[in-house]
Image (cartoon, rainbow, N blue to C red; front, side, top):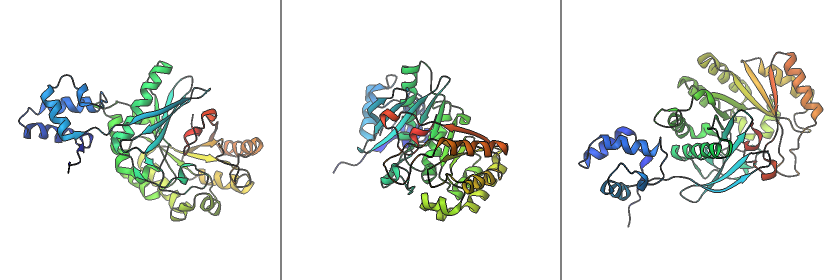
Length: 346
């Protein structure tokens, strides 16, 4: 029986150097291969032209590179690009490039399916099949950076973890991916240009604060009324609002980084004065801003976009209390780029 080969990108640079020494080669060969894997984002040992054919054959014999492949790509009339990304085991996730006049944002996935059960989310209807590996997250960013350069003549400027999955339920792999994205040995992007969005996993928010991360935090809040929040996101019964409040205060105390609340307003669910007043109160706990998101309905069911007048009521109430609020319009509607929150970010 053939032994399953290890993904070479699971090795650190030190481990790669040790591998070459153990196989009678020089340690610096590990540096060369590491550069090909990350900085040059190579998907094949054959690409490694400054490495001998014999060495490439040895790598092929011992390892694989479990890279992604953009299976299908759709371009919206508004310039949004949606990628259906095929993983090495045949599973599919989605990532999206969202352009504006001044920047391009990559919206990436962290899990195949999702661990959580948000009733309004298309991804939640898929069971979580597995976590993405750091290299698979990294590859999504590389692919969108290339598309940004090709279609818009500029490199990728921002990354949001708002695709399929709950990033904080795949904490270690997401952190490793961000480390490589921000490393000079990887893509060299500033962590300040990266936002990780969570549905409110309180203990992991505290862990991020303890780990002194430098990226930004967004929370998919959607209601500051406990009963409403539990109804639309049943898992939040395990992460209730007082606990979330405490975790966010801890986050701000440690990082001094503002929190962004992602907030969809739905007809008949959170479009009343009680919901508005509760959000205003919750926003006073830590310095924050609010993105009011236009909802892209996934069917004709319970969750439908609220009226513009209610959105305006939210904005007026928030601004009256000196809370920055913006409305985020849905992007890529004509290509149905609506996996998780993918369509809703600009």
